[in-house]
Image 1 (cartoon, rainbow, N blue to C red):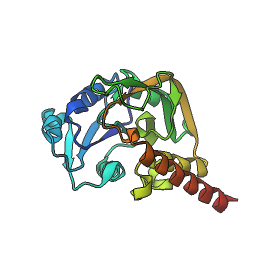
Image 2: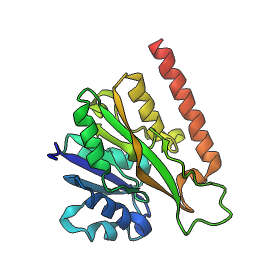
Image 3: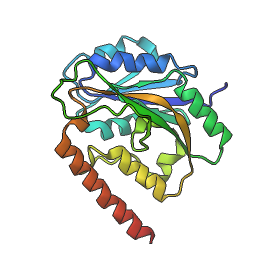
Length: 229
């Protein structure tokens, strides 16, 4: 398959333990991204060294800490391909993830975004006392940016990820709500093409902050509905 070109953006913050596995899952794709950007969000571990060990295969950007949304937005600013994908530094792609999504967008030229199913897997370092429970059942989580393959025009039409502090646990869902409000066509793939690692430092293991983010997201959605009414 001839790819029109994919930029893959990987935000990383103290992710050295898992980052190599994430990058490997991108480089091993049956359709490889033409550009892989790792945006290091002021890590204090060896994340930068891990990313740089891949040489010219990975572009490394270092910045002051702005959070996941800011790191993704920085990657978007430097992306040079017409299609955009995201991968969290502690997750991994199935082998055919980008190929399947690329084909889906090719088969649906009006679609601006393709999403796939995701499932969780437990990292061995997750403590037994953790309250977060793995959901191994395949799910559509359109707010999880790692499940996306988007045309660049999506971000030109609805904007980029919100860096608002109250949305730091729901920035992907908030952006997807804008995509829905703009009535952009989305195509879905039923298969699991992303595996999300659950470990001791996942953002969503902080239950209170996660719920605060969900409440902020609900308020944003209500505002969007009022504006479109």
